[in-house]
Image (cartoon, rainbow, N blue to C red; front, side, top):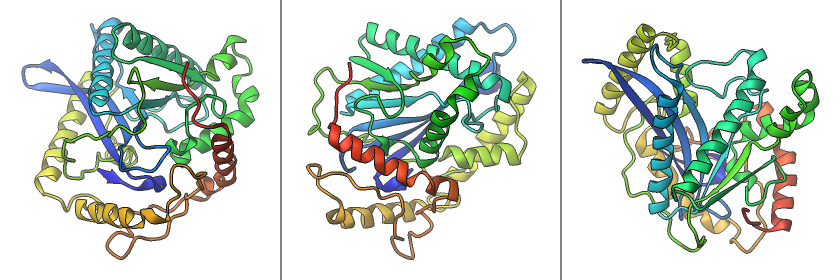
Length: 338
């Protein structure tokens, strides 16, 4: 879908992978949500992609971790290669901190396993990106901590993700207490800047020409999680995964067949939102001027007011912190990945 959440025009994309377990049975094994900021978006987000979420279901019986890893690597490298061909310059990834209890899709990790899960995911991301560099899918990557890594504008982070990072920074010692001394240092390297092009060109046009599909309950991770929890869909065993996948696919087909008036927000409203946003771009500062925080947005009109999401009190509390980061980012310039 097309969105202006956060004040920056972008496309939200949902990518799913299915695995056949019988002649007529499939299960979802992988899901990824991305926010793609094309050339129409305002600097510094233009030409950048944010990987909002990556998740996979548990291994099924007789499936090895190496097999699953190879499948997911192929999907991720294929995505990087495709978006590079579309002209995008950078991909920004982030392993959720252990204090984020709702970052997964298929199953939430217990509190006592979140630190180990974050450590494992950070190491896995490094292996994936090293493989992508070796196979020349990406040019290079850099990793670092939130607020210190270069060329990672805080504006690509959704406000709830930014809040989780601020909370983790404040409670890092308590969260990591009792673990190996190497864990805190590793968890400070969870932010990744992936350079797709060998010679970045911030004036190049970044555009995915594929047309957006009709909106469904899976158009955003938040809406998908609401349905999964409300319908009590589970993926921890093959029979559960088969039944849940069948129900999800059936509902997707049914909703897409209804056309543009699907889900809580219509495609027509989203298109109208984009037109209003483009009309208002004269209010935005040009790239040469410092960025200003625009988390609280005025309604775009009666037809599009439902598209503009209000900030929760918790998200609103992180406004001043983001303002500080924007000031620091403007003062330090765009930086470069190493």
